[in-house]
Length: 616
Image: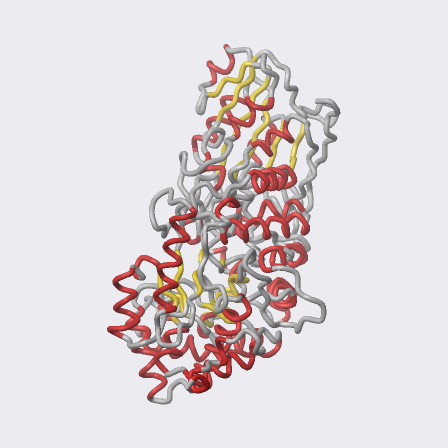
């Protein structure tokens, strides 16, 4: 009897391949399809989960649960609350017939952005400006600890897009327009997942234990090359271009053991990537020998058709046969499961395709140690927003800043700014707004202006840094007469884009808000000023350059605003280099380094340097 009940897949002494084979042989079609489903936590409440596992669909579990942007157990939820929620879902999975653990995934694209009090690092465009892969690897390790602090083992990052047009609303998730920079920054993957052991097999996923997370290279492929930068649009390329521009980030990610790859909403020469068998099965799985699982975008199958969801059966058929293994449904899971079951039972999708998907999902779960350690405790909650991580983020901010102008002439630099001054003005919409300085994917999917999470605003940082006798005056939108009459020693104007993400961030004009234009004009007309731009990409700025004294591209720095003051006042020098070409007018776009007609305001790789002031 004991021998009959022995289940090899539950025995960690067996090689993973044996465990997968044993488990797959025991699974019904319903249980296999369950593994391919990812649902949002909002529809995976305890009652629905119970009904889902036992009532409606029999004894099988969802392969995965996720938190979409802003999908949280409670506002400002503690890490302990997150751990309890994930464990509750996991207990539901473990109580099914075979006890296959689910994998919980979340967006953590610049630190653990959904979670209150997490350390938020500069968005990828800023990290690209650092040109420092080792720093990015450390950020990966810190992010893994903060995500694990909330009981979550899987993240939808890093984005290895090569943004070729800043009009794209996700351009800040791209490290650079240069594929070599993007490729170098895939060093975040061993930070997130752990360093590969010697002689590890190429293409096989690797996660090094309970302090690491499974990563996801996104969004495969060509997402950053769409026409006019329109999100989810069409990328038109020659056969050679994708390999040289868009593919290096994926080949490096796979060599470094990335566990999963997410498919892009966009099309490739008119073919929706979610239905592109040649690129998913043919190139990613067969040519690049990727052995992890391929996951869809949020409602990615729905958007195969236009309008979305008009023929969902067709979308399931096209997406699964293209080679997508796990489907981020994320709400209408009954419709997906019924549709896929019908297609398999009627031989439209071969069972071999289902088995391939499930083997890949199980490989990642076994590799992560989920079968041995499916539940989390509170022992890692101390890592969320820790001082060490905030110091690392502050270092990243310092290294990400790009100095584009310093003084009306090279002989009269304004930066480093003197800490001792009678009175200084700090102005602009982004000077004292933690939400603005973090950008999208912060607490909410789109981000949000205001006091959304804990951190240090630029204004607080400036006050912390200047001499105690220096008077710091903050006026968000001063008029010209106020500036003229107050005899300021100098001014710092901090303006930029409001937070955004994805399609809502698409912009065909790339202009700053009117309030930013007014602040720059009113302040810089009568006092020496440095303008600090808080943006996810280059913006139209040529008309302001002559009237300002200094210009800093600060990108979207995250919670640690002190890093900006560290460099402005000379405790550290400027070292950042442009990861993107700064255009003169949007009519030039797309314009990337190496193009024939290359006439930028500031070229790719540009960045003035300053020396730190000793004993400052």
